[in-house]
Amino acid sequence: MKVNGYNIEPRANLQGANLQEADLKDRYLQVADLCGADLTKANLSGANLTGANLSQANLSQANLTEANLQVVDLTGTNLQEANLQEATLSKANLITANLTQANLTQANLSGATLITANLSGATLSGANLQEANLSGANLQEADLTQAFLFRADLAGAEFSDTILTGANLVGVNLSVAAVMRALLLQWSDLKEENLSRTNLTETNLTGVNLEETFWDESTVWPEGFTPPEQ
Image (cartoon, rainbow, N blue to C red; front, side, top):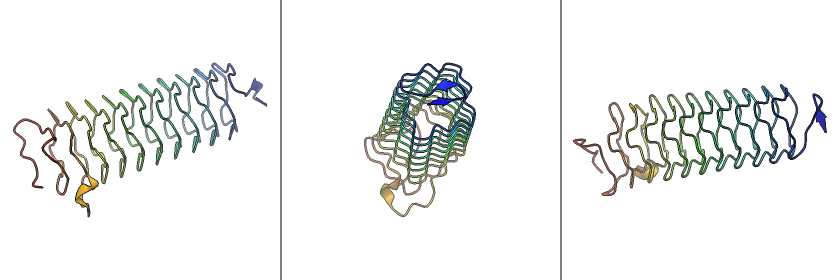
């Protein structure tokens, strides 16, 4: 298959290709080299991009719903306002990626590397971030409602006005996190926000509502901080 004169197939060399608004729905592009390609507003819903190289590519406003992006290299990739709902990004490399205002609802990011990625304003409700590395990531105004963050690394991440309602924070490392003003409000179930085995050393909890959160003796609080009643 050819799109804009380029062969679209597994292992294809598409470095720097101009594929703006291309219809690549359900295409097989495993291990394809799309480094630096322009895929602005492209339709990649359901596409299989396992192991592909999308580093420095432009995927702003692209449709990647239910796409398979396992082990994909997305280093420095522009995914601003991209739709990644229910996409699979397990073990993907998203270091320094721009995911501003991206839709990652129910996406699978387990084991993904998002060091210093920009997720400001992104929607991650119901996303699986188990053991993901989000150290230094920008999560300002991001929506992490009901997100699964088991053993995720959030050290040094920015949480200003982040929504964490009902998120699972078991085993999360929040050490040295920047000012955290997350909205942790009105859970009906004490275990919806679980801080057991969570490291909060040096975390700034100013303005954070921790009422009705669950924690135990394994929770590490900042020095001098009075934990909420259980």
